[in-house]
Image (cartoon, rainbow, N blue to C red):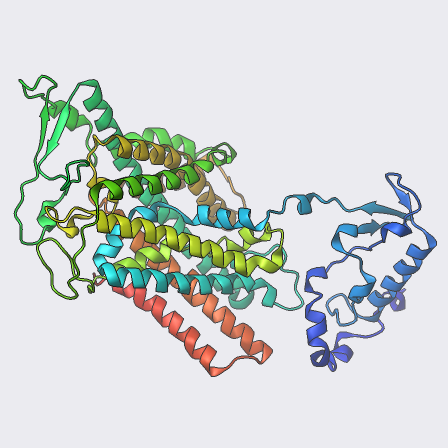
Length: 560
């Protein structure tokens, strides 16, 4: 019995000639655990359990012969490809003499390239789009455009490394691996836990930004409804140059060389009496009350055991982004372009084309182009796997063009004079009055979308954190409630004391990007090349530069 189960050739004997056949065996990685295949013409009839013909039985014996030649961990003498039919013709052989057709369920769920491209575009498009004009202002108009293109290309390359990293691992079935599994393979438990920690930074950072924005949108939406119901007109001291659309500067002290006083006057519809709104402002404050009102709504939603209900509303993200693009186009057409080019000198109304605050834009863009922790999962559903690199590149191109379109139009159309370009806010919607109907619709869309997405983000945090710590996604209601209170508390504190989404995005982006974008992908790529004997010094220098770039990007955020 022992002789029957012992392979005829062991791995040590086969290893001597392995290097000569590496190219042919690597192609067998996707078939590491093959079932027995039976060609359709070898099936006798079409019953649910078809009897296997004599020809199929001979093929079965041939496959068993190959399996006897070597151990299960060494596939040097695996069945050659010409013996194995195509994937859609797979039948599983039973020792009882029957063959079962493999279900084509996975094949049916594959998406064409166009769906995959827009899935990546929709996933990457998030709250960062609201901060792109502010980031361009911080870097300077010309330098900001160049940085956006450069960072986009770097992020695309690092994402490409992440995408191909599982396939570079030989002799292991990586078909269901994610990037943390790849990190664990190369760096052990440290790689697994560190990738988890930095992934949590990106998720929790996004949840904090969502809370700040939800507080902002809920406040302005309530302000609009209150003013409409009570027939209150708002007049601001700052507005657009052509008078068609009011543009405001919420913090005019940033207006260089000018001392404006920003006042908001509430006037009744009759224009005779001043409407008293002090009580409303006391109970409806953007930082003091509204962030706490959200706790009553969102904390119970975070404690749901499943988030499948909220996943039905993910399509709202696409609608919101499309509406934002339409809004930006209409506003730019009405306001016109206001540009002057001053390369290094600051004027009363314009910022230099090149500014030393450009790392703030690189931090925002690191999160804006971040999709590295889920790109492998997204690409698994692509129908044509050979087009993965092309589809990923097209998706990044669309994302970059969307960011450029919104950022350039908002910056160029911002009315200077009378306002300074320095008045552009980290959330560019804050530069429009709460009484603007189109902006009110945008805020309402985004508010409802974020209310549905926020529990999904909390669910992802809970699944990853609780699963690693306790081996259970829902260990108990007390554990889940404690985690949710900590997450919600962080959002409330930031919304009250530091509601600057631009800075929150750049810090979280630079932190998670250091590990998941620059360090881990570069190290994995270099190690993989070195193990194959294909590492050359230009590649080593370039990927070392990427690691240094990620570290510099994070350190620079603390110096701005």
